[in-house]
Length: 141
Image 1 (spheres, one colour):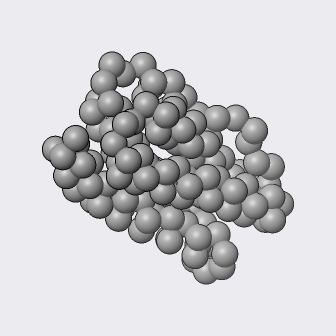
Image 2 (cartoon, one colour; image 1 turned 120 degrees about the vertical axis):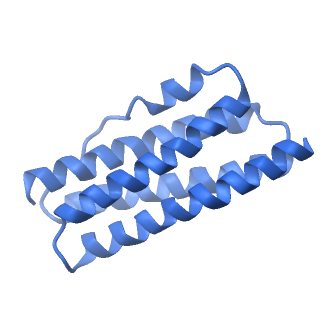
């Protein structure tokens, strides 16, 4: 595996792990059932992404990182749930951009390309749907 691609995939892997940690903590604090369920779905997607990225790295001769990115601590440091949700949304945008960077380094066909394309699309959709859901649910709370 090309070193630049491995580094890009490991950056995403570490970020997805951080997303899981951040969402776990936020889920424990949210009292609104529907919002908590929405966040669980997001966390489960982050967890699947981390598992798939690790498998792609390993399956293509690379070495997956064992680290978790700093994002979870940044989310936890914020004072309100609204601020944390806003940062999570920006984190999804960041992940979509970084996924597209990794995609540019990936072979033009094959499992890495296919997975990164789907992952970028999921992150973009999550950003848009998440904004609408958070606005709706926080307004109802």
